Length: 430
Image 1 (cartoon, rainbow, N blue to C red):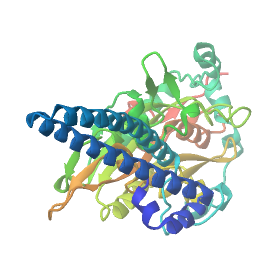
Image 2 (cartoon, one colour):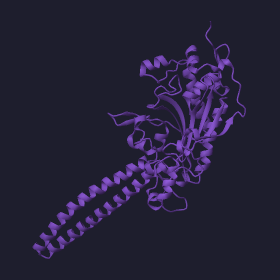
Image 3 (tube, rainbow, N blue to C red):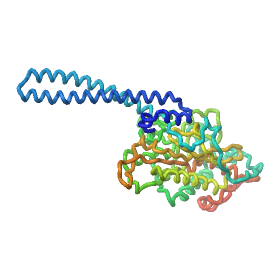
Image 4 (tube, helix red, strand yellow):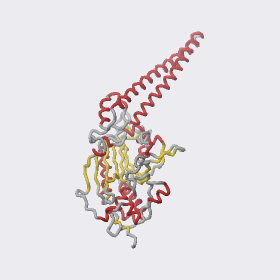
């Protein structure tokens, strides 16, 4: 969440910044008014609490002096003040909670260098690879669900039989390809990132720390009986590993990576890109995450983007990098770069990575701070996260890009060691 002091001290700046994210300035005005009311009610509660304490002391003094009448009178005043204090405390608590909920739903302030725009159509393509678009053969223009079915790699029908639509089932070399992609990425990140295998189900406060709750509850899978949520990304548990703790600056930046399944309802996806692996409810992903000081964060953002790019390039896939405009940023992000690969079989650019710098927005929600090496009060860390990579769409692009005239699929050379040396998925004999 943003720092409420910014609203108190410079509400106009906050309104101008959030207006770049299409947030109505009236929301900031309402938050400021709610905060002022909560502070006034808290002050009233504290005054009454002080009054009760004073009266209690005076009652004790009167009884010690043997003045029972005075003690009884003061005790009656104390009871009335106590009742008023309890009522004021309830009002203050309710008002403070209203401010907290408003802050939880308000997005992060965009970075000053994030391009201003209303939505995805205003995102900027800042580079592509390779420089010249490849010439794709007719054999590569077959969608991955047809290729996967023909080669026994993908069985969407049986996946739907088991779990419903948009739950893929990989088979044979198709399943092994998915595992190879994960191992390939984890090995590439092992030089600087500690591998973590977090739980796949998390508590409500863990989801709230990243900004996924309360705003995006409809997009998540909730196990109501246990009040646990299926993670939409490993960013969620990784962000909360140090929730409520104070780190040492000497330990920063702290880089983590995790391979997990991810679950998303895709509630608004009905009838839109729902064939094959373009939009699924469950997919595997390798996540990169970092805790950092504000000074370390810009370089880490570049590092995470660079690592994601390197993986895609080594897989031989055509890709582009987008600088997301303010109107397309996620709730927690101040700055985001997306990577999209081109899948020739579906003739679409597919998002496979989103790398974000969340400044101290998530750390404030999770109360994660660090002790400055030079002394002073603890400060909130900055968090960064990025997919490197999400595999469902990468799998689709690899299969489509590698398809040959005879129906076989040539696999990227970097994956051969993870496939027992296999470099080609042969077409079935006619």
